Length: 168
Picture 1 (cartoon, rainbow, N blue to C red):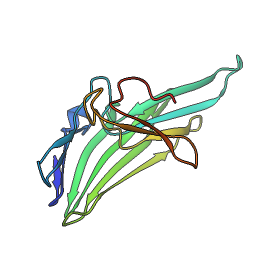
Picture 2 (picture 1 turned 60 degrees about the vertical axis):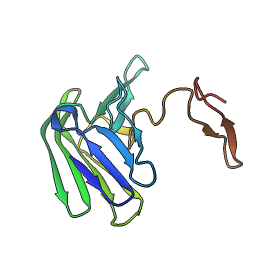
Picture 3 (picture 1 turned 45 degrees about the vertical axis):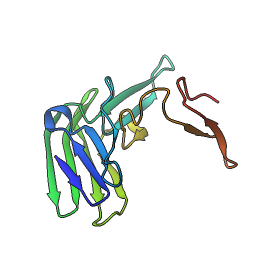
């Protein structure tokens, strides 16, 4: 499954891999692929749900992502847009209470891509705590790219050819 304009080519896997983003290619200049799959990463989106604290004071937490089993998984394509659907995702103790739609739009010409994630949660216990979208794999090999780590409203730290963690 792919989407392209004159500047970008976005490539996604099939439903059996949760439509993971397996590549983004810069079509300008050297036509370089700058996003690659990464082992252990769902590759498109990830959601964390939490339930209120139990009697022991421990809140129950569950992570779902684009590889989580759903009753129905499919993609719809329109002119410059892909919509990926996961319908009927189970949460612990509740069946088919979550639907997710991940949208990617790519305007004609050299316009930027637009990414939107929608979650319809019908759970009586779990609420959405956090989301990651897009959850992209390796952008550059470890130790090659420079990383700007934001630190509040006033800039950040530039880490040249970064190899380690992202702690300032």
